[in-house]
Length: 207
Image (cartoon, rainbow, N blue to C red):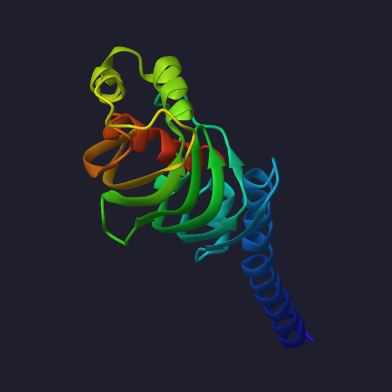
């Protein structure tokens, strides 16, 4: 009898452990998907952790995000938006057809490999001269003199045709705040680093 009871208890414990290993990641993934799509769009998120109970505290082995047609707010300033991502050993996020700030993003990628301390960010997008001007005036202030100079010299068109925008950056999290270590790209003459930080923050803020 006692042996049978011990076996039964062991089996129940194993079933509970197995159930939590399935149920907890599914629940956490669903919560992230809901936050990403609160303004529309679709998202598929997978979180991995062993044991899965670590996810309850926000920690995990890996998070994978594939989303499209999202509408994300572009943060006005750097905040601790990377706090959740930093708790995962690996991050792999790819978003397509996203609207954020003045940008229509065709593809946005944010990755960090296991054991790495920095994130790799890349983006291909478009915007119009008018949208970039408004964004620069509202969010960036004085540092966009060179951008306005390009308008003054006629290097940017005055019409409303979309301009291609590209960005590649290495981003480090400083206590959850995204900090660009190096960046390259063309954003209509706007300073690249603060925009890279805010684009990364726009995604991380919803996780």
